[in-house]
Image (cartoon, rainbow, N blue to C red; front, side, top):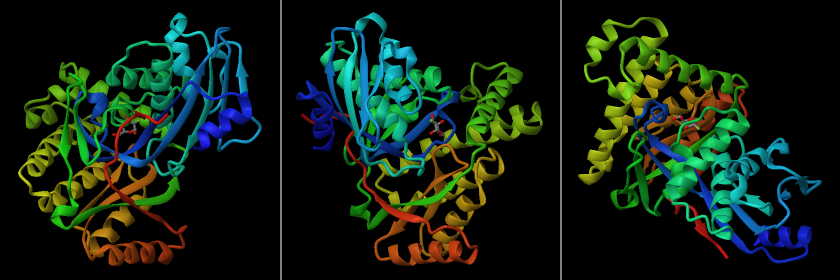
Length: 370
Ligand code: GAF
């Protein structure tokens, strides 16, 4: 295992433990997590493996098999910089409960595809540290720790979806999560049995505005909730009445969040009724709402969705935060090559970089590897 080899090469000993945590795609429920709403992600087969040993002197030494010139050495967790903040932030938040660590990570989440390599990094390191220091944290507590590290140390005001998907997912299932109660349920996702598959289309587009725009969408939602006098947009029960009291961006964001929560519940209902063949229109509606009401799509995402559906997909939508990253398409068996060809042709016509196609099978959440 490469994480163990990297650990041995850098630190001259075997790690005390090795944990793997996956990235994710989100089937539906986008920009609902920080509105106390519902999400339905699943873990992907790619992730981060973290080899970790405790130390006694408070020092953190950390390296990545993907980054040259390592390890970074920090006398205090708060000194960490760059990519290490995702991992070291977790240790910083644990304060006196940990006394330093040696960490080697190895990741294979496709970079820039919006498949949550950052959550995989946070959750793999937090899970390993949890074990070596005997902290007794539950998977959800580990997810919350990862989210807080990202909020406080990286400055990305993300919700809980990505870390929860990484920490709690069950192989062959999607994770239905109520982001207010943090209650979750594994929903069987055996699409192959119904002649379907999920194709990830990595648009390879990344728009630099992304981080500021994410924070702005979150602020729009919070101000809409204040205008409506509810704790969060999750609490809007009469959409028509709410929309009549809002205008501009607050109105659009509310329209998306409230209808998206309904779509998550509807999609879960269809899956539980064995009707996966009928979820395509919910995926399409989600994308249109993200494009027109939440305004987080970019031409590369919209073109990939349209071309995938033209090529034979039953439905498609952007997945993740938006402004680039990936689309997921629900593709019937036998239509894979026509969907890929349609998307590739649409990109070539516009002179865009070739998209990358990845099959998505629901993988297992964080687990011990050695
Ligand atoms: C990003 C965030 F990290 C998640 O918390 C979530 O808000 C998502 O965008 C949008 O659904 O992945």
